[in-house]
Length: 361
Ligand code: ATP
Image (cartoon, rainbow, N blue to C red; front, side, top):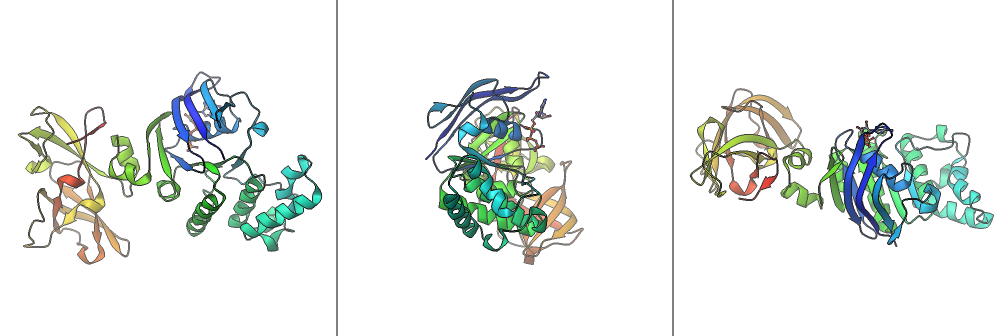
């Protein structure tokens, strides 16, 4: 049982650089929190501060209500799984997993029992005598997980644990981590810059940017109602399209002259950004009835990327500098040079003001 509370947590490095600008976050017992954000946003700094590998400049970190800011890493009852696995190369898998327990003077019979149980959990039973170099990347990652699990810590920290694995293995290990975490119910904080990994693993996602939390919530809440333009562009793949629009008479004037009925209550002439996801633009066949309230956009296909079930289509829209990205179902795939008639519904539109914050219409 462990809850984790971060209150106004700040980190200033020795050179004066502020990597964390006051992070507030409450992690519930058994919850898997995923921290996601671009390179340099402070994810590792945050995780290392939780582990005790970085000092906290100000603010408070508590585990089960007890302040741990000043506690040594070993005294925090936290286990960390690293990207590079950090296994001892000269030790067998058995000894890699047993090492921490031996150091703490756990009796030999207990160690054997715990290693065997953990090995079974992770399907490592047949590999216990091998050295790390005799293992595949996925197996090494499992040993690293085993070493964390065997300690029965209060909290797991994962620092991009899958980034050295190939695409297929990443998906497999992702599922395994999810399954294990649900089974063991250990409170976990997981850092990644891969937003698919973040979406699929997280009970709640924390999106960071520039040492601050942009938004925290369930993956679907962040996907459905991103609080800022940054989150809107970061969550979802391919990224959301952004169109400059102007308020006009309860409507939004789109680039190229179209209009979308959407009452914002803002003054005419106010400039906003309208976001729409590639999967939410609907391509209408010739002569098709417009499905409801919304706007029609015309765009000329410049590039097509078939993915199998879907086709990513990049199309030029008048008045927009960037290409519009549209995810079409396979059978609707359009060729280069075709003109798409795209329907945009107000329910699928996201609006952002000039401070990049979401505006509810
Ligand atoms: P990545 O995804 O690339 O690992 P990150 O989000 O984990 O990035 P951090 O490693 O936490 O980012 O770094 C956050 C910021 O702090 C970066 O601008 C980095 O240059 C800076 N930083 C990290 N370590 C130090 C240090 N020891 N001294 C000064 N600045 C540092």
